[in-house]
Length: 519
Image (cartoon, rainbow, N blue to C red; front, side, top):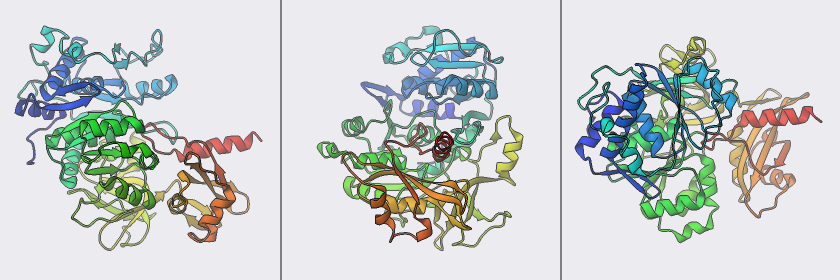
């Protein structure tokens, strides 16, 4: 599909609504929303926000679960000239307060199911308005908000463009907070449109695709891959309120979804559901995997079982989601790699002195392109450390092979140094995942008086499986070097994760260290 002549996300929605107003775009439970209905409903939200005198560039925070409510309020904020601040719905009051203060949000749109009694955020000096948003209402509720709202387009955004120019910034995406206080990545409309356009081209998405979304919409992955990309290519999205293996198969089968995006742990879980054989999954043609390296063992087993190819990619919030991805068949791809850079996205491997390394050598991955954030909101010091000469320093360690494909070996902060030897957790985890009884694994470094750090593995077993630390050690001893074998192996019921399902290794390490101190 040719490039659209749009400069903002609201224009993208408006253009699609004009082209085919009655074409279904959003499938959510028993609701079906057309392009025009989403456009009109978000217009109404924008009018409401304008009546609250939201001004250009003001921040409006959303604490909303997956559902049509999130989408129409997200676009409504942008149409009114605001900057959307999607907030993790699992955060506690203190964590939310930090984001509201740091972003300087003047409006908070909070789901009725999340709103506490009273106003726990009245101490935030910039917060002028807190709106409780009803969750689970019928579509007609949002389309009947009032003739005055729906009869005229919002003042700041008309059907042919902006009467009053929108700010170039679209969102503040706060990092997961696995290291200290979260930072708000300031993403522009151009950041989003560039990333969406190049992602659609790289994956060869088309108007017949229906992207199943179960990742939380407050996360940039869900926004770019499963909301904006289907909108851009003329397809549709199938939305789930949360991830549930049983509901996943039911929804995919019933709605004839053609694709989905998930983190490696999701693929591991889906592989362990025998009931998947009871559903017609023939509509599924490809899957996207990101957020963490996928074990090759899981990759191969999933493709064989579900007859759909996986496109493993790479990106981060500071890069608007996607920087590289493997090409779809029949083009060449490499299992275990994060693929090739998107078109017009530059990537390189740097040493500790910011010098580019030759192919095959391991260093820090840096990216450059129009999807790189403006910077961290209200944090110039952190911005200068992360973006230098237009290059985004990711903190991820990897290498580029002779064919140009990139591979990740781990986070620089996760690297374990044992007796002077560098150990990347991913290599140890790959060996662990090859055991048929292991569902999930996380490898971290723990302090050791003799070696500096020691390798520790925390393993979740599949249901009904029994395994000891000795069994695991015996299994991997011929798969990795002796110094990489974990001296400490614990079988656990669950691993700490972010809302998107990414294992939080730093949180795991902190929990273990705290437990050790209490002994």
